[in-house]
Amino acid sequence: MKIKMPRWFYQLASPRWFYDITSMLLPWFSMIALILMITGAVWGLVFAPEDYQQGNSYRIIYIHVPTAILAQSCYMLMAVAGGIGLVWKMKMAHVVAKACAPIGASMAVLALATGAIWGKPTWGAWWVWDARLTSMLVLLFLYIGVIALTSAFEHVASGDKAAAVLALVGVVNIPIIKYSVEWWNTLHQGATFTLTEKPAMPPEMWMPLLIMVIGFYCFFGAILMSRARTEVLQRESRADWVKSLVEQS
Amino acid sequence: MSFLVAAIRRDLLLAFRRRNDIVNPLAFFLMVGVMFPLGVSPEASVLSALAPGVIWVAALLACLLSVDGIFRTDFDDGSLEQMLVSPQSLHQLVMAKVICHWLISGFCLAMISPLLAMMLFLPGEGVMPLVLSLLLGTPALSMFGAIGAALTVGLRKGGVLIALLVLPLYIPVLIFGSGTVQAGAMGLPIAGYLALLGAILVFSTLLSPFAIVAALKISVRS
Image (cartoon, rainbow over all chains, first blue to last red):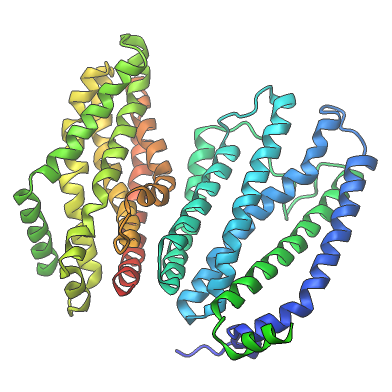
């Protein structure tokens, strides 16, 4: 069976095309991310109403929830990009997957740190062995494994493929780990946003959060592009177009 | 099928020629278990509460320790490369290696685990669940471990890296494994836990050979 993909999909495989298109997109993403994150942060931290139970300490969700969501979706993107790289032998997909790993790991660290800061006044402890905290920690370990494996190979292409296999294995295991840990112990409140239900918060509270989440996604896009661009330049340093780019600047 | 049997026989024969490889993980398992009374407390009440988790963690580490060897010697002397280019099914080859690893690590660990259970004062009702959970859980550990071993076999320093890659995957098995023993020690039904361990085993047996084969191909070509 032969599957025909749209033309832009094949164009993505070309490092030069990727470099050109991202140099156009990058300023837009950065600008939108900056505007949304400043709006969301000021609205959430200053103007949103106080929580009747948790007081002002709840405001950390404006950082905590976006980082936690990003840490998870970044892993998905990394696995999907790795899978595309394995199936279609696309160099650029591996570049994207490699750029994803450190971003996702730092998002997981941020989510854990903000969670700990919030947990101290609310639960009375920096860390509790709760299901969602533990599965975020495991996610961080999975990221560390992928980063370690990528850098352990001297041959770049083998490191890419090995990391892609590991990311795919991880993505299959994440639901199992999540449910096993949840069954083991849970204390954390339910998800703040679900696609199927109306949020329990008033709109003045969740609107800034939504803006922050979208802003973080744009921020993630911008960071991802700039990391991938650097990686492309390093990998293609022998290509003519990179040489002429260097000579121009 | 005969290829599978032949491959298992070869690996078992090799393992029996180097008996250290079989004895070392078992000795490690017992030694890790002995560290806990020395480090925590020799009180029977404390130890019997800790025993299910301690025995399972010790078994998990013993499996992890031996998993690096699954493909190592065959890779070093070049026979792994010959196996990859041979017309035989890679799936079966990988299954044979994992089954053999389980027989010389997980199966033996399950057999000597009652000894450690006695030393750590695990209540008598917990011993049978311990052996059953180890018998069901350790093959899945071998499966996951083989993925890590296949990914790192081409690297000179695979040891610590394998632990980083594989330990997160071991978490569900550990949770349900020690859960079985805890439930059994308190006289609660264990069928649900065993069913979950069995489900993980079936799932990992179905899917991990694909990952192991892919990883071996990457490692051998690099």
